[in-house]
Length: 327
Image: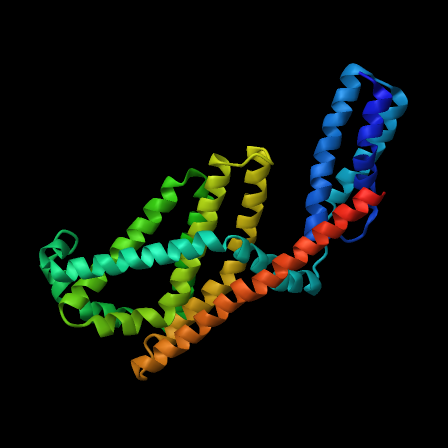
């Protein structure tokens, strides 16, 4: 192996790693770049040691690697600026990048659920496969009382915890694909059978009036979690020609972690809607309008703010590549 040629070809990456390691603050993209460069440099050092163990090159590269490792491992101080960056850039950008997955799921599952509601309503014996006669008879009363059975603050916390767990399960199990399909199928069946029984009894307005105020936002969060999870799984199955399967999986898993954290406060809002707005003693149209308004704000945040954040991130990437090419 020609050591001089090998070093000359890779010295730019080592210098870039050292430059990033010296900075006091790194953006998310720069932090990712530092980690990638560090792992590449460790491979380069291993190759040099095994083939052409030049002590000067090994010592210099080892020094740069130590600086890179120290920068990766150093603790980060709490900063309101980092929270602001997460809310205005990192989270909405990841929502936007995964939009095709969760929007497609939302449309597909909404159509399937509507079809199941219609089928159960039109075929009453189907409901008997899942519910007892007593459960079917008292379903409307149980459905309405469910939202006011517990103290509102406790109910909001309970709903928030359950929905956050379900969404996290969809994201975490996405690489296996099948668990996400099962979780979505179980949720679809529950909503479809309940809606079908109520629709068959002439109480479809009750079903929609109590589900829509919180369900629009809550189910969208579930769709987002499931879509991001399936996106991770698809990255493992079909990574594409430009990156390795491992690189795609790492990148999309990181994206999934950002979405999982970002959905926590959104699901809290959905829990508050379910505990305070859904059972509120006001006309159903008011409750639905309130839920639809919050849901619309989330869609604007994910698609409009997300698009702007994604473009800013792309612009930073282009400038970074330009600087690297001009060094």
